[in-house]
Image 1 (cartoon, one colour):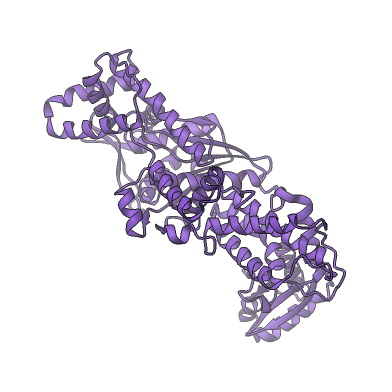
Image 2: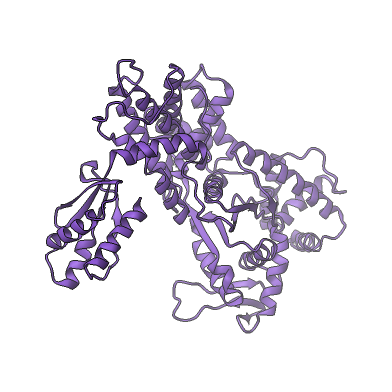
Length: 559
């Protein structure tokens, strides 16, 4: 409908021989001001040296003369805004569409025939999956689902950090306890402790430096040795742990590209493009951006020991991504603190292969803090994913003792994911268990509860929902207007790869439905429009379910 209104405006301007500027068509904040509003008259009036309101009257008359059945009226308001009011028939038809399309309502062919690669949740081996990974996972999973909803063929990968000097330090500690490299039942806690202990030992004992570097070289060379056997077993165990956690969060991965692979390719790329793009400096190889790019730092891509840095590894990752998958679009998600790092990488990459940068989208997330002494003291400094989920689950159990364990898990994950996804890209989050778990506030469980409530109403009657008005005097409800906006919100979320537009919309829809629910007897045999009210209720349940699915949150059957 937004596109249709934009086309009507352009045709009206053409009929009036007016050149179209960069006007906007938006939803007014207040429903009283229509379903759409445009500033086109104010944009064009300046060049025409006309009064915006007078020009708005001419444009609105021209638009309304087109006699579009879906537009009930067009009015001029304020200093020259043109407001559009859609017809009752339009909203009734939209309810029918929601009911008939079901889980496909809101889906599009925007990226049909295209391939999209999404990279997220990339762990550091030997380090447990922590809250930063959970944030990355929530955003990455939602973007993955949005991409699929847009008709694209989607592949999901992770980029684990598997070989580094830090990993070599951990292997050094493990070999002290198991010299033959054969490990028995290594736990993620044991591996994490080895990483911490190895780092501390390396800092305190210079005599082990050569041995640690030898281990690192053997790992990079994949040399058959006790250290490589120990590393391989640790790597296998870490990936199993990673898949266990991410599956619990609702994610699955099609493939992995490891840092060790990318490092080899990245180093080769840098060497092949030296001195044209990269320069040798004091035994290292560096990238120096042009002088006018003050926002990009000089960075080392191969260090003085001849090893690729993170910059070179990410350069190699780009090569591997496009060589292996050749996506039309490659989306990757990182902590916002890596923005400056990727400015360097992408600037260098653009000079090697322009398509890599043109087809790449970088999305970021902030950090999470915890409101409330109870939550903070339980989790400590950097909480692990499982500890965080268990802490939230404990709170769910306290508040909802009558629910079964599967539903409690769904509520806990909804609380966590919704808190993450409602934030704009790069923004920090303060997780508050009191509000995040509330069934009556701006939370994931609140949306779940409303969807379950709507479905429970439908179960209480044998009357079928029908978007057919028996009493045509019924005014268009705000909840109907919001329902019709869902495809547009989904499209906006896809265009920007920003799930927070969905969270904002779902909260507004839910609040509108609950307000109507509180003042309406939906099941009322004396009401001629009972079946229509049930159609509204069914549509709300469906849109909430579709929206939550796109956020990676499930809708329970009972709450």
